[in-house]
Length: 123
Image 1 (tube, rainbow, N blue to C red):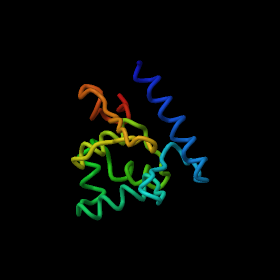
Image 2 (cartoon, helix red, strand yellow):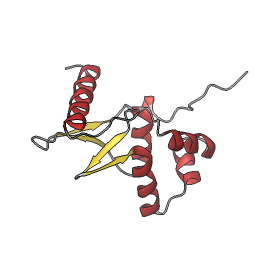
Image 3 (spheres, rainbow, N blue to C red):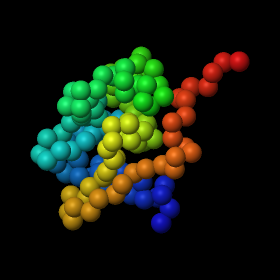
Image 4 (cartoon, rainbow, N blue to C red):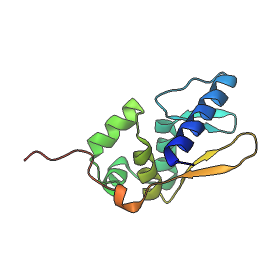
């Protein structure tokens, strides 16, 4: 099965689970932890606090600026590849877990697609 198709199927299933449990779906950034619902920004802030890593340190690890990372956290708006890069930088993995059978699906990208600057520099 194509990766893109699999991602779409998983996203539809995730939305279905969220709606069934009367949770809202925000910018592709809702994360379910047990019975709690946490946004990506809240989850990342908790992880940074737990690992004693600052936003500046994380921004450097993901080839971004503190301001760009701060903006993304404030808007709670991350692309999938950005979440994968953040997970890599934190020595973690981005996983979708099926609520019915606990099967896990790792989301990752080839190394040559990661760690690229997010904006093209002006010439």
